[in-house]
Image (cartoon, rainbow, N blue to C red; front, side, top):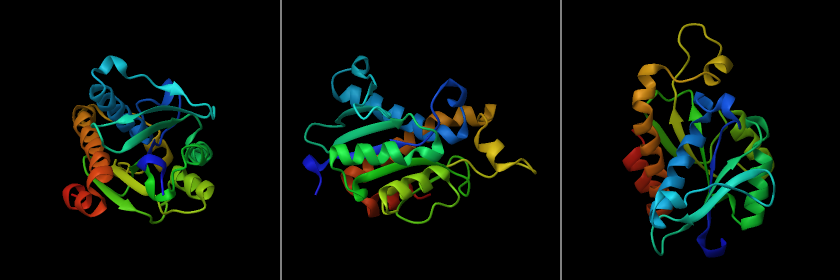
Length: 202
């Protein structure tokens, strides 16, 4: 049982400005949107600020999306994608959050851009971030908000594709995709998996 019903929401990505606009960093964008919503619930966006967690391996922001609602810990690990499990495990241990109260937000190659899926558990599908979290937690039974980026065009290498910026056309749609993914996280913690899947698994 979690302390005070705490949920740990981890945005997957790579730290630093070099990676900020990459497809692989969609998780960071979604937790940024959720952080803004936490700030509004506190009385204004000016109250939103990420802080370094005492574990030293992630930036976090804590709060509730509504009075009496579940307590959220939003996290942006400072490790690179293939080592993201360590900070996730450290935060889960610190806040006493079991795997079934962890939500990982990540890019998904096998889902078209501007669509998404939500699920509990499952394989890693070649995603190094998910693989790292599974290895550190010792289980894959955490929630995933899988934000579609689609497959690379032509013969472009997958690694090059995920570590590249969104196209101009995609960037026009991206804010709406980020907003929808944030809505899905809210739905998961308030309404549960089944209702969230019915609403968001387009």
